[in-house]
Image (cartoon, rainbow, N blue to C red; front, top):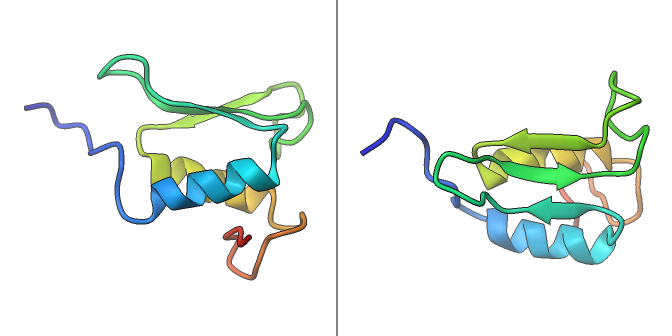
Length: 86
């Protein structure tokens, strides 16, 4: 067993589905191999402090969703706390 966290936990999968419906311009890429991270490809200029980058990532889908929710908190479908709602 590795020391890596589980990739899917809690409400992350439903959150991903809702987010993808609300933001078709974002591509969420699952890990290709056991040692890969979840990644999201976002429009240029969307990552705070990194205007020339288009990819963010995390070992856990829930943490990646937290990052995306924070980045899109002022977009339609967001609610206080950053989580998207349909």
